[in-house]
Length: 495
Image 1: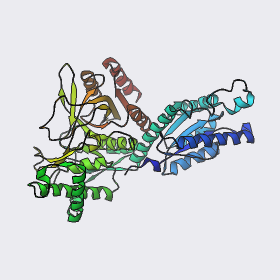
Image 2: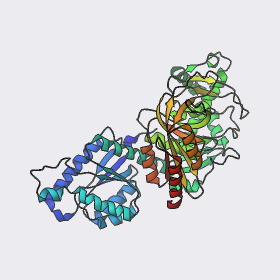
Image 3: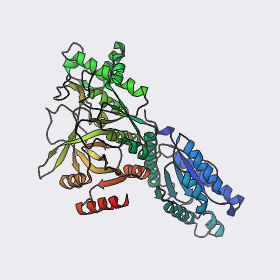
Image 4: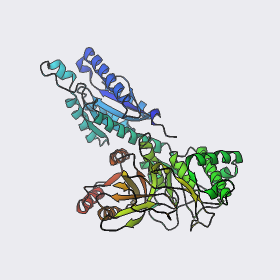
């Protein structure tokens, strides 16, 4: 359901008419060569689209208005091939609603030392033009990503690719809706938030639905569809014997499949990008939809438990950013600690809903009692996550603004088997260490629900936060509590 190849980044090349027709023809040829190379780069998942070289205020304004109106355009790359007087850009930049990346590059990588003349200098003066463009962006308070280097360099293309993924995630939120099935878990604070401000700032719409809206879809599921889905379960997972046909719990597995199909139909009926539910609002359901949620997340939907719509939006955003990359992304919760001084760790899990995209091996489809909710034993996929670097992202509402908190972590293999843990889990060591990371997270007001990704890095989240104008606090290997407190104080003042 996520396909970044359908998105476009529009390439704006700035110059001016002062240089004459022949120079501008060369500027246009160079622009198209750069754009075609970027569009063909394996690092950049979107299409790069060019137009004419922009040399007048009117052309720049029209370009920005067209970009705003295009549903395929998720952002703009601006490159000043020559000097482009920045007063020409004011009207266009003031109207621009799409994310902006400033590519500070030049056509040739190396100086042709023995051949440089003033014609060369006039044509290849991105160093000059880029500073003029940078000034007007700063003067106007334009949020943007600045990328410096030669356009053929894979590291530069990688940075553009990361930014284009963040821009794609923002565009996805701006046209998407998170469905709240039921309300938030009662008396929980951090899962609450201002849905109006979320739509203004993040772009995402959050709408509530009664359980009856879902149940009507579940009741309409045909038995033949359940049979097909059960066959898929057999192909994809190891299944306990009691869940197979003839087993004591087979009918309960059929009910779990019915719930999944009904939930899938419900999500499709509203073109939703994510959802929430809570065990306190299950009227009309025979079991909590654990397996269904896990598989919907694997298909690309965002999810937040106990009505946590903010986390559902972030899970979806990170899944969009991670599309086509190695590694999974999942809803997660810091559940319990291993506080042995020889190696402190966090065991993350949830009652049921952890995405199998982060599974180290083939998940096991099992059914166990759930001590809350008062319903039948729910089906769920059980697995552990593989070792490797990851990032945990939390989002919180401070009342006057949103804050993102990111902790870089290292997933590790459990020191011992977990034979009695009936849910999916991940074990990690936070950077720089558990005491420092946990203290910083708590000081920041970070939530217990997060979105965990093994596919993306903090740079993606920094680009995302810059585009939407939300504070991001980073907890990494270099974090020290005194400095972290200073960053929070600065954020409180600046934002």
